[in-house]
Image 1 (cartoon, helix red, strand yellow):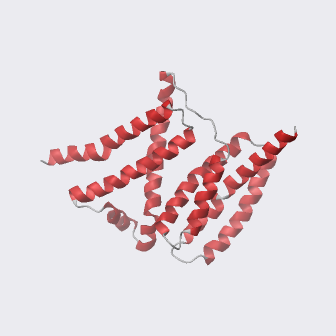
Image 2: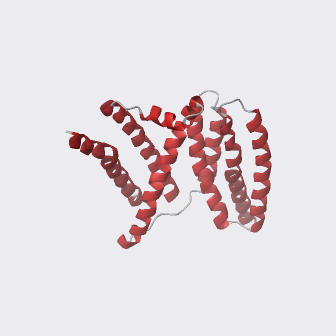
Image 3: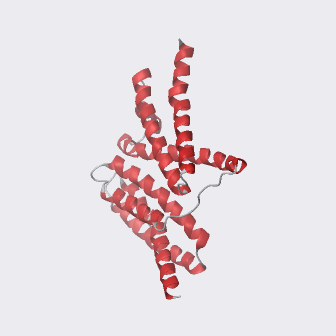
Length: 227
């Protein structure tokens, strides 16, 4: 019986999610979805499957994994409870990131190429939108707010990678200046923000990358138009 329960757990919590993610990954490659968008959607699906697993664990084994994680985190239980969705999302990013890294090594053997094309302004607009909403909603629903912070962080980092790949030295100077200004704003806001959700002000720092990225693209577009 114990062996049967163990096998059931493996099927529900590991095998089925892996099959679902693998199938969707294959479909996304087939329809030529941009890589950054593909990984984002897969992370959201992984997050949804993770939440389903938590409910199944509670239903089958009568174990509340959320409470267990909060106990391990200790300290301020209210604040820890607020950031749980962000922790789950981070876990999903890690899972999909590692899987994608492995798959990317295998795709060339199958003569399949990843789609690294960029949808213009997508990373910047989504990053700014999610980060702005995370600050606006923290007083209403801190858990959703921290989740939006995690979603915005993905596109903010993607914006930074695009800046590193394609821009000239003066864009890096502008990036440093804007980051320093936002760092000052962040320091002030962190000290003034109501406890226990002051960590959400980290959004202010992350805004730097999509903001500078969007500005550099607009400038390039203007230069191209003039030429």
